[in-house]
Amino acid sequence: MAVKTSSISLKVEEGSNAVVVKNLYLSCDPRMRFRMKHSKDPGFVSFQPGSPLEGFGVAKVVDSGHPEFKKGDLVWGTVGWEEYSDIKNPESIFKIHHTDDVPLSYYTGILAPKKGEYVYISAASGAVGQLVGQFAKLMGCYVVGSAGSKEKVEILKNKLGFDDAFNYKEEHDLDAALKRCFPEGIDIYFDNVGGKMLDAVLLNMRLQGRIAVCGMISQYNLAQSEGVCNLMNIVYQRIHMVGFIVFDYFPQYSKFLEVVLSLIREGKIVYLEDIAEGLENAPAALVGLFNGRNIGKQVVVVARE
Amino acid sequence: MAVKTSSISLKVEEGSNAVVVKNLYLSCDPRMRFRMKHSKDPGFVSFQPGSPLEGFGVAKVVDSGHPEFKKGDLVWGTVGWEEYSDIKNPESIFKIHHTDDVPLSYYTGILAPKKGEYVYISAASGAVGQLVGQFAKLMGCYVVGSAGSKEKVEILKNKLGFDDAFNYKEEHDLDAALKRCFPEGIDIYFDNVGGKMLDAVLLNMRLQGRIAVCGMISQYNLAQSEGVCNLMNIVYQRIHMVGFIVFDYFPQYSKFLEVVLSLIREGKIVYLEDIAEGLENAPAALVGLFNGRNIGKQVVVVARE
Image (tube, rainbow over all chains, first blue to last red):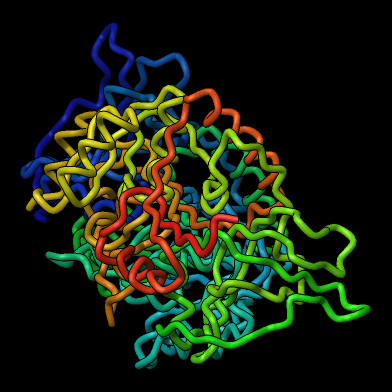
């Protein structure tokens, strides 16, 4: 990745319904990795070498030919990794009705909750895991998370209110670690990592357990994915395993925000961000996701207003 | 396995609610394999060396201390692999209201249908697969099955009415075989085999596809299961993967039989059986399941009445 300089017009063409925005905050998401290869996977259009990356971001409208957006509006949606984006198709951006008591960058990443009893979350101090765990706690679940450092484990237990947490890098037997944390087994596994962890979790699922597959970050940089061997437990334990992608839930987004922002205002949800300053630091911030460098949601500040 | 001779009383003890049955037909089921090892899997109690195997069978009541069963009744349920069984706990047997137009042995194996559009079934000429495919056809699905011989493939296409079928042993690239049979992808995969086939299917699932996991027979005799690498497609394609065990559906069994027996009588469902004669041939019949020797449901005839 390289930072390039070029110029664009900050005015929308006469008669067009495009929107020009000034980008404020960019979201670093593991799924951007998929667009960095030639892919036949539907829904993941490959990035073009030489063009800016694309991802979720918070931006301010500079000029608009679209009746729904006017200069000064704050929006959330798909923008380029650049100071200004000319958005030809404003269907991928949404207006934010922002009030000052919630940091604007929070809009870059918030995801839906799950219900249940014994809940396990991998990559639990990441952008998604931190929230899933807190939602599960609010719903009265027993929640355990794993993460890759002592510092992250401390945060899970003392700042995010998880019932327990462990550092997977210090466990040479993941199955044993899960059995220690869940002597009764796991009802819900929120999978962010896949691979060996998923294999160990399968050995610890309870009857009628549910596995929500959000991502498998441990696999994205491998030339060949690790094999998962314990799938027969899906039959033994009558497990429901379901994959999902955030785009599927866009219609519920505004309703979801309403709920979550209230929880944040009431102090019932803590939201951790890892902030990288400046577009020039964006590539390293993105790459850092795959080394577990970030704590909480990785955001890039392009501009503060 | 060995055939042993000993004697039991054919009379139920005074005051007991046990049932003594004469076993007629025994069902050979891959899941019996699980009981042939020490297992912590719930729901699979290990067989005791020296004791008769247990499995599903059709039997006739010889004597009964239970109000629901009387001498001469035909029953289906869990019996021993022996000529007569003394069933202490008759909760695991069910009365059959048999009429002569359906062979009695059919009661040893019948399973629930699935709905959808493009349906793929592995081990399609087996006890379960043959029925799943025909149910799917009756529901208007496009149905393709795979099996392990030319003869089985012919049966699928010409006798069971599958739209297409292939011999997986002749395909060195399972992914390519599936793409040939399903250029539009697969909506429903009924998995009987697991392993490499499941891995190839994951590459061919359509958006919101469903995988019903009935069994993974390709894995049961392996010391270490094969790894399945393409699970990330569960996320890409928002797949629902659900395991189930027939015991969970016992409450619906009588209603199900009613539907299926009508279909058989009307000639809308063909049911293939592979009959082994005599208890002495039962071990070979069971072992044959794992080599794909059987065509259709493997049954052992202990006695015809």
